Picture 1 (tube, rainbow, N blue to C red):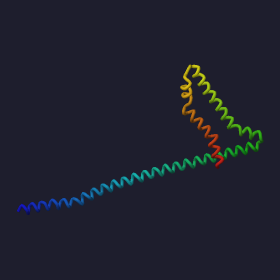
Picture 2 (picture 1 turned 45 degrees about the horizontal axis):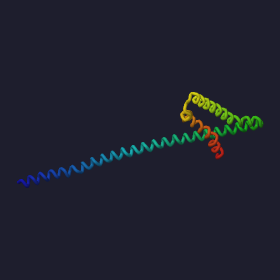
Picture 3 (picture 1 turned 30 degrees about the vertical axis):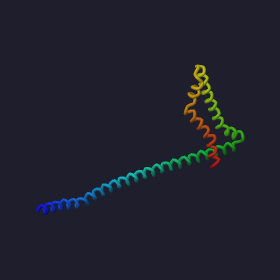
Length: 159
């Protein structure tokens, strides 16, 4: 009798477990499927974000190239107008940008020279004076001027 009850009980337990296993596997599969869908959604969101950034960069480059073209056209028109007005007007027109550059450079050098002279009059150490007198703003301004005169010219010649 015990065998019949024990066998029946074991059969019922194993039968119940074997019926539950597919359901548990189905639940685990659904959980994995949801994780996969979430992962795919995140990837699609990232892709759309990158596409949007790419479109913005594309618009910026397009705008920048149109601005450079407009500036180049304005320079050509100004040059043609100056040439048509005569040799003296063309020479004066051609000297405006270098003249402004040299004037600003002279003022800049004078201000820096005065600052250094005042620091030396205050008995400051020359190393400290030179380090304090050259900042990232000074470097940025030097880079901007050099880029304008040398890199800009190369780009104009290339076009």
